[in-house]
Image 1 (cartoon, rainbow, N blue to C red):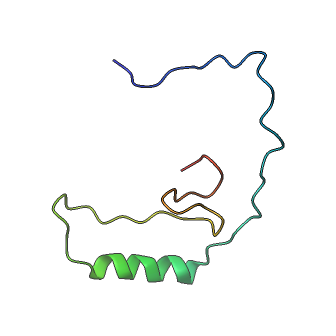
Image 2: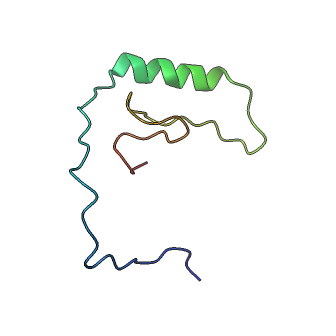
Image 3: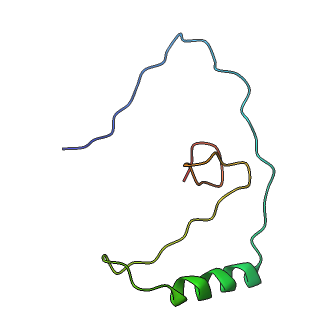
Length: 70
C-alpha cells in the first residue's frame, strides 16, 4: 500500500507566483567541516549521523534547498 496520491486541482485558482530562492553555494571546506563534526558525534541509537543541506530562507522545521523540496 502506498501513502502518496495525486490531488486534482483542475480549475482552482493559482496560488501566485513561485517564490524563487537565490542560489547558494556550499564550499568544499564547509562540507568537510560538517563531515568532521558528524564524525565527532557519539553514535546515535540507530547508528546513523546525518545532516541536511539547508537554504538560509528555509523555514524553521523544514530544512530544504528549495521551497517544498527536501
